[in-house]
Image 1: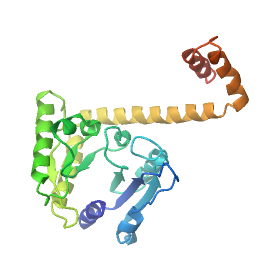
Image 2 (image 1 turned 120 degrees about the vertical axis):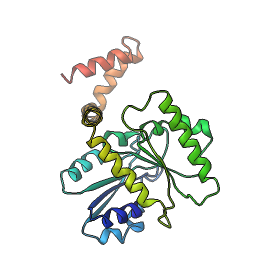
Image 3 (image 1 turned 180 degrees about the vertical axis):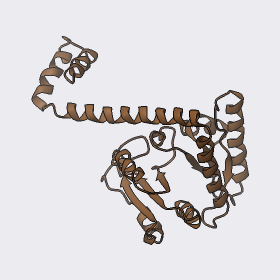
Length: 255
């Protein structure tokens, strides 16, 4: 799919950068980084940049260093930057910290109506895509997603953009141009609605700063040596203190 999107944007004379995040093995810690193999041809184009990253156990669908990498890519003259998360699940929502347009790629046989409605990733998506459109159950998956979108509309959950539901076949390229058109329409929509775009940008920046703050705090606490921790934990173990009080005292040390 990413290869097809790269080809479609290149035919429109747009340069493309790709940050592809692959899951790491919880046993060995390694990652296949198969995007480098699947998109070897695209990487030969000097208007295309592909960088693979391993999640290294970081939750949320991205690598820990993805935010910094995207900051660098955003400062460079790429027309489109595409971020691939490790996969689809209810909690892989870190991409909302960075992406202007979020595309959720699903396949047929992904679950029933209730499963589709409850998945958290659905709540942040701007465009829904059912791939493998030649599958017998593809139309059923499209109907489920459209019903979910319509229900969300009736509940007033859409304030500025109602996500379309599209079909593609990545191997043949069917529906790819329509998907790219949908992505470009979403960009144009927010460009023409500056208040909505500003709200989204402020939200992304707020979440990004919070993410960096958590990393900095985590690094500071990891700097406490084992002996110091033993003394601090002893007070909680002996019930002279409690975990909340200890956390507050440690937080005060950062001030």
